[in-house]
Amino acid sequence: MEGSYWRLVLVVCVGLALVPSRSGESVGGGSSVTPHGHLQPIGNQVPPVGMVEVLQDVPHPRDFYHKYVKPGKPVVFKDAAKETAAFKLWTDEYLSAQYGDLEVEVEEGKKENRTWPAYSMPFREFLSTYKSKDIYLVESIEPELRGEIMLLRNLLCGGFQQNLMDAVLWFSSGGTKSVLHNDGADNLNCLLEGSKELYMVDRKEYKHIDIDHQEGSFSGVDVEKVDLHKYPGLKDVPWYNATMEAGDCLFIPYKWFHHVRSTASDQKRNVAVNIWFAHLYRFDEEDCSKRGDLPDFEPLSKYKFVATAEQIRSMLLEAFELEERESISTEDLEHVTIDIDSSDEVDMSYKLDIFETLDLNKDFVVTVDEVYQVPTEHLVELFPDFSPDGPLGDNEDENEPHGHDEF
View (tube, rainbow, N blue to C red):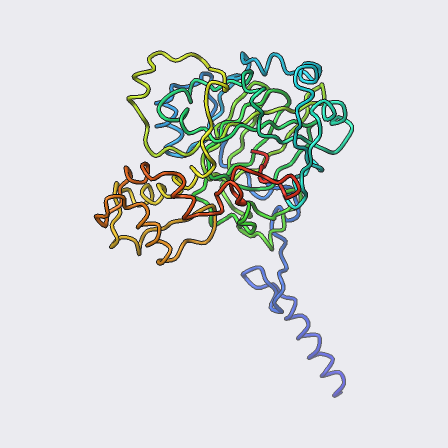
């Protein structure tokens, strides 16, 4: 009898341990419910809240700034690149004949892995092997190629053309997958061949995205098998889908999170060019008035790039935007957020150093005008990571993990 009693107690205890609680966890502690989309590709966890807007015409820079850049809203310009020289001319044969001797940067593995270093090879060699190897090209575009890349009408005045930071060529046989990441600059990407699908998340939803590799502003989540126990914010994050076909151009706003999947054309090619430009907090109306009527595009070779360190200015100006003010005093500093390249928010001592550099007239108030007037080299002194030899600067060591991403 006594043995039967203890067997009954044991059965009851085991049963209670396995009964799910209302929270979805067992009484014993472990989760009994697998989150929807767990270990599935990113985007399968929750449907998109919508598609990115598509325009049939490229807007004037004024409209582009006020409707898309300032509010941080992505947009696709349908077929905007189809009349450009690069779209019409850039076959493998043409590029090999005209630019085959150029050294280009190549990465192993079409699924992006930022711990792997890039290496160089002649463009001609890449063009003869990329369709049969697991490699893709990611290269800041050399001056020789810039005459065939066009700056679209939406960037030809208002200050955009004075804040161009880099132009990058992305070239593969398709099947590439980027990490989930964001960038400290605005971005216009034009697809010359193939197609792309983008998973895009508003920067306002940053609490959902775990950027656990802050040195590169990217998440370590496996985009093909999302671990929702490790990255629970992706379970219900609002996201947008963008689809690009050959000839389309996509605006990706500053600090929007995105993941990119590329598919090859019938010719087994996927080719894109993106242009990064520093985020503008003011639109220069006078500059557009001087320009008058704008063409559909102009060669990129007509324009110069500014230093990568101009990102610092944009990030500092973000503090004014968040506070909706034109000036910040020393008394305001305690409540002002300054976030540089997804790193932890800077402490008060650091804020005072920044304030002293920006306060050009030493009146204990920093204005937006003063932020624009501070020389770039003084900003670099505050944030040495953006120096030419720093990890976020303009010079990259090909033996180190790359700093580019799939736009």
